[in-house]
Image 1 (spheres, rainbow, N blue to C red):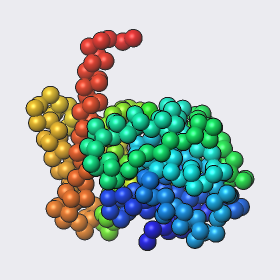
Image 2 (image 1 turned 180 degrees about the horizontal axis):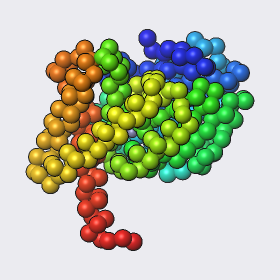
Image 3 (image 1 turned 120 degrees about the vertical axis):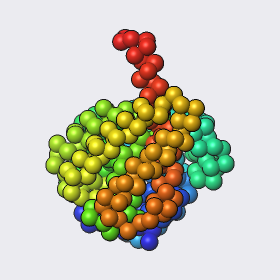
Length: 320
Ligand SMILES: [Zn+2]
């Protein structure tokens, strides 16, 4: 299924990256007007347009395309999508705007992290967003979607160009990558499996914890994750996330500086995540867990090690 209606005027759309239920974006409806939170990749555009048609929403009634942040699985397709939805305004963090107007830096840095072949296969050539169609969101800003209030906060931790969206109508946050990853493949145990995403290059553990705390202040009923879909029992999931952020920080300090730091930390994270799967009694074997989490374990390891290095340089240079 490429899209699913979740109630409260919200549909989750599978962006078609990697495997089913790996990455999502969301359609939010209000009185026939619509917003799309995250845009997937160039290859997600037909899926999003199909969802609009299935929900009976005209292309001209899409008012906003929102990038949680400018990582390519969230905003790689936003320029291509904007071409198809000519009346929609693109909204993004102030630090992300120039990268969506001129995606050359995003394209190059993604090629550095993932390799040029993977970027071509998974994302294609990024399409610029015309400057006159994009606007930066301020922290605490409310945007009106035909009577539905979309409330945005600046949410660093995963990336400094990240915003999250609180939707009072459903009492839920659209979290992007700020409230971890919870793949539905691991459902069936005592609770959903969840872990933080610490991918390169701007992960900051204290900021991530502060962002989680700020989201909890609203006492949300649910979190709508890009990876993947809705989870509830938010306070319990937050406790797990905070514990795993600390565990990842400890492991990163243990392995940083070694010649084999990336593979060794990747393996340590695989073991950490598998221990979670076992704890929950999720019906997934260790081999299957390793396969499902291979990309995330390696990205998390790389992001953690970059953070350790940055911290070391900052303390060497002293404050200010
Ligand atoms: Zn991200």
